[in-house]
Each structure stands twice: as C-alpha cells, then as structure tokens.
Amino acid sequence: MSSEKTFRIALVGCGRISKNHFEAIDQIDGLELVAVCDADPERAAQAGAQWNVPHYSSYEKMLKESKADVVTIATPSGLHAEQGVAAAQAGKHVVMEKPMAISLTGADALVHACDKAGVQLFVVKQNRLNLPVQLLKRAVDRNRFGRIYMASCTVHWARPQEYYDQAPWRGTWEFDGGAFMNQASHYVDLIQWLMGPVESVMAKTATLARRIETEDSGVAILKFRSGALGAIQVTMLAYPRNLEGSITILGEKGSAKIGGTAVNKIEYWQFAEYDDDDKQVDAAETNPPNVYGLGHQGYYRNVLAVLRGEAKPDTDGRAGRKSLELILGIYESAKTGREVPLPLRAQV
Ligand SMILES: NC(=O)c1ccc[n+]([C@@H]2O[C@H](COP(=O)([O-])OP(=O)(O)OC[C@H]3O[C@@H](n4cnc5c(N)ncnc54)[C@H](O)[C@@H]3O)[C@@H](O)[C@H]2O)c1
Image (tube, rainbow, N blue to C red; front, top):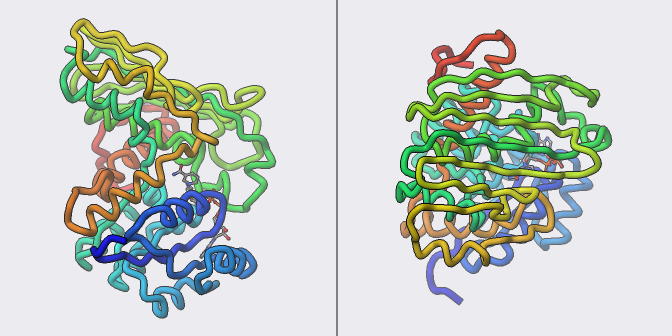
C-alpha cells in the first residue's frame, strides 16, 4: 500500500460508460470510490451494491453528504456543465466525461467555476492515450513528417436505432448532439490535438436513417492554421458493424495511418528518417473489447498524479474546450451553409 494520500471519488451517472470508470478506479491504488448516484434509484442501488458504497438518487444530496474529493460525471452530456459547476462549488475536483459541455457558454461556466473554486477539471479523452496515438503524437511533435500537407479522419461505425432508443437523451440537441458531438468526438479531438489550431471549417451533416433530431452522418473540411488541409467523415450507419475509426497524416517526409475500429492499430508508418519509436510499431496494436477502448485506467492514473502534484493534466478544461469549439464550428457551418472561421466569434 502506498503511504501517499488516497483520493475519494463519487460518481454520478451509472449507465453504460460508468463500468469503465468503476473498474479503473478499483484498479488504482490511491483512488477510492466512496459514493454513486443515478437519477434512476434502481441503477443507483445496483451500482452501490456492486461496489459496496452508499448510493444516492439525488445529486445535490450526494454532493452534500459524501466525503468525496473528486466527482466523476458520466450523465447525459447536456447535464455536464451544470453538474460540473455544482461539484466545483462544493469544492470537489471534477472528472468530466466527454463532451465537457454541449455549448461554449456551458464549457466556459464550468472552466470558470473550477478556476474560482481552485479545483482541477479533467475532461476524459482516453483515446489520446492509445499507444498508436501516442506514437503518432510524438512523431508530429518531433517533426518527423516535415511539413504536414493533409490529415484525415474516418469514423465508419454502426449504431442501430435500438442504441438511440435505449435512453431518451440520445440523439437530442438538448442533451446529446449527433455523431460529431457524441460518437466521433474523440476523433475531432485527436485531429486538432495532433494538427494544431483550425483556421476554418466547412461541413455538411445529415440524418439519413435514424429517427433522431441530430445527425447520424456528416463530413467536414478543415483548413489548419499551419496551411494543411483536413477532412473528417463520420457515419453511424456502417453496415453491418463498426468498420473503421482512423486518423491519417501525410507530410513531406512521412505518412502514417492509425486505424482499426478505434485508432488501435497502425495501418502504415513510413518515415524518411529512422527513430527508435519505429521499433514499437508492431507491438503498439491494442485490441480493445469495444470502441471505448482501454484508456480510462490510464486516464485516472494521470488524474491521481495531478492531484498528488506530480503531473500536469492530460486533458484539462481548456484543452477539452478546443475540441468542443471545433465541433460547434462544424455544426455552425452545417446550419448556415457557410465556411466558419475559428475561434468562434459569438458564444454558441
Ligand atoms: N469516453 C468515452 O469514450 C465515452 C463513451 C460512452 C459515453 N461517454 C459519455 O458518457 C456520458 C454518459 O453516456 P452513457 O452511454 O453512459 O449514457 P447512459 O444513458 O447509459 O447513462 C447515463 C446515466 O445517467 C443517469 N442520469 C440521467 N440524468 C441524471 C441526473 N440528473 N442525475 C443523475 N443521474 C442521471 C441515467 O439514469 C443513466 O443511468 C455521455 O456524456 C457520453 O458522451 C463517453
């Protein structure tokens, strides 16, 4: 047992993704789950029984009563900002599932509330931690591509109508957003994390097959501030299953594609100059049990290191805001039919 301080975590939102959080917290010495909450009392009770912690159906009550240092928020996206602000005001650090909010107003309120309360804000972007993605990031940072000409991102996944029908918040503008905001948001995050600031975006979105308010498919064309061009194409209608979740970078001295179903596999990796990282390419393939990947544990290791003052956050609120801004720029362009410059001028 480590003699260092243990941080106590309360989680709100005991749905699909909560399992990844519970398991990650359970496996890390130094983190301890102390309470769970879900608006559905049965779900709350079930999670409480499984992890042997008190359960709540009122978030306010949990904030007041539990002795947590950290609150993890894994509720529908449209609730994130408000619940995050409440956690910060209660003096808790915040681990926020993606997207951190569904509007910039919400994201800014959250960032400011955490700053004001002097608490950390972590936005879960676990795909950044996939080994192939880490190798790609290092190749970019070491300038191995030379000048980068193009970056593209493909998310060809399958989400049947039953997936959207599982919960009333899915596919709504008020609580979710569409394929860009929800399912493909990690990919929008990766492309801007790897390539740097986006200067402008043009996009088309469509609801081609699912009975939802938001888009099930879309394409976006990006111009990066570096001059490079980019494209993101997303659909939740791939037949018959998740086929590809990939990112490709093409530069003057290198080409690399990280693919598989969820950026878990190096498809090609060619550089003019050798680097010791090249030895890791074959071993870098991971085979996650689902497209959420295995990254939540790595993510929480960083959370613990930050809380102990030993590291900087992998993705803090300001980093999370950048990818949200690009998603909102994509939506703005799709809505207006115009090219949208970034940063966004008006608050959306
Ligand atoms: N990082 C990832 O890869 C990843 C993967 C899946 C989902 N997510 C994100 O996690 C969040 C939850 O997604 P999910 O698939 O687990 O959804 P879900 O519908 O399975 O779970 C959400 C849970 O929140 C509960 N809830 C709703 N309103 C509440 C309230 N006011 N107070 C307390 N509980 C409330 C619901 O009863 C439900 O159990 C979403 O924001 C989603 O974008 C992230």
